[in-house]
Image (cartoon, rainbow, N blue to C red; front, side):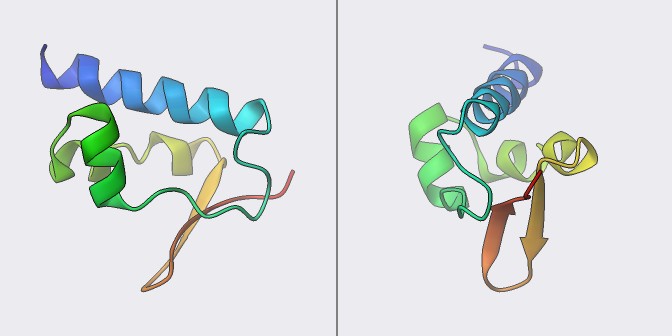
Length: 71
């Protein structure tokens, strides 16, 4: 499967989980290692999924992780 497809699947799945309340506001997203294992992608693909930040769905806290933003 091409990297773009894997990246888009990751973005689409995380977006759906956030919008459906699977990850409520304030929730910490799984670590990069956990996302790599769940989606069978490289760390580079996980890091490149910055579209979630661009959409305003998540925000990063250096050293603490990535969290779902409140609506």
